[in-house]
Image (spheres, rainbow, N blue to C red):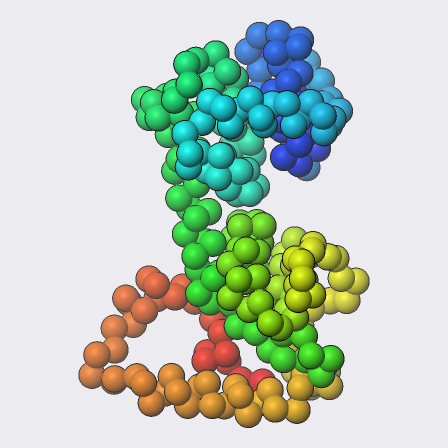
Length: 255
């Protein structure tokens, strides 16, 4: 079987779809350069990402997808799963060979897989929107550090831009080493060279606004007083607020 190797970008995946119809190689699989290893059996072809070709494929796909499916397709890509990459590739080929609306055929394994992955990514998106806690820095920027299971920052940008429109903020993904910065006008992706410190210990205490500790105390007091001990349900709490998110929640940590 032939293998297409792409650079791991969304444009790269779409370019691979274009190349498939251009080359018509027969059955193959798609894999990213991040996990690719040369194989003695079969042949490999390196996909050269071309934005113009990617744009043509994306425009064509959107004409064949129902209203909610372009978001599903992109969100599944943000799962960063090699299986999802291949299913997205195979799904695009399938959709171009079928009538419009074939994305609703859940009997197709690629349609079903991408729908399931989308729901996982969508759940992580909602958790980030609920669990992100900002801290105020001395230079007036509200800063939040996150480590989501999936690359959901592109999906939450509009939510935080709308909700916090009158303050500068930075949400940084420590796993993927990039962040979203809002400058009161637009949201831009940025990269930082320093090593983020989620705990906010003494070595980074000089970064925070003088009132940040007070706000943290007030927030924790609110949660403490709003709590009803007789109605505590640890299992239910962990189901809705998994322990891996606690390190970023002000009410769960101290400075």
